[in-house]
Length: 243
Length: 239
Image 1 (tube, chains in turn orange, cyan):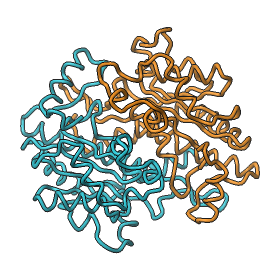
Image 2 (image 1 turned 180 degrees about the vertical axis):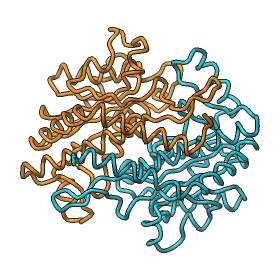
Image 3 (image 1 turned 135 degrees about the horizontal axis):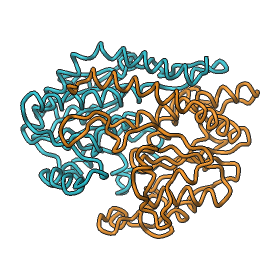
Image 4 (image 1 turned 45 degrees about the vertical axis):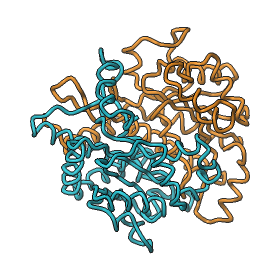
């Protein structure tokens, strides 16, 4: 079929139906876990490799967004730690392959036992995301994973233990993304138009909505930004240093 | 209705609404293909959540090669901007950061720019749009029209050759929970519009009978070599 905006619009719409219809139960589980975490004064910790961190970014920082969301960011090795940029960006040694890097990242943050982890990776086969999830699990945190099952099952793990990200998830959401992420075949070697960021945003925002609804039903005051300065400052102060 | 389902249904309606911008998307795709034909790179700068639009197109499997992101992280990592100003939004009020971007990136006279800002009037965003405009290079502005139309003062729209609308409300919220307007759609619509733009640029290559420089996913055999060959042509301008 000829590649065009119309084709993408049609395919992404079908895709959203597939995502909701196949994952609704898992999305509900994640929403319940997020609501439990927030009700117990926990923070939702988000780690995503590459584009995957978008799920967290989209849920944060605007009027009508939840506040207790924290993004674990590899840049913090430079911004909060003592890793020089030249080492961090060195393309031959590849910083994220440093042994035990996940544990070191944890040290920058004020984590509480009731925190919930959401770890996102389309392929779910690379070392650092798996280590982040494995450590969270070993430390007793609840872990949710967002991954493309089609992609992750079609490739070998690059982790020393041969593990994949989904194996560490208490809740595993399949973002339904195709292997390689691009949606549209072209008849040539390449496929075009990646969909994982769109799908991950749908997962994040739909679960954030349901989380707020659950909290509201339980009579918990919503820890959200409203755009009203005094209110927002109070909520931000409550989570200061954690979110 | 399940509120998650409700959110999915709202998004589907919004996607259908993008058809009102199909002419604009086609026009912009032609402009950007022209830039790429001349050896130019399309720089993309997203203000705040506009960054998501930039991430959608820059160095992505299934995406075209000649895109590059103008990112505030690249300044904070070099201590050229503080984490505080990057976090509290004052970063975008300081137009002098434009000089720093020109220092750290390999900008080229053949390049053009897409600037994404819901409001469209942050001084840094306006400055970057203005610089490309003054060099006679195409400027594409992506704003949230319901928001940008309420702003005063200079706007990226003043310097734009073409523009797109993120199609969200102002403020960008689509649900009401416990009396509060919550949950956004603008960034995801931006991502979808970005992919439609990508599809249309690709289509323009197909119609011209020319190969398009598309990055392959690393699971495709030979992808690393293919991707390196495509990016090496730009000598550090795209990554």
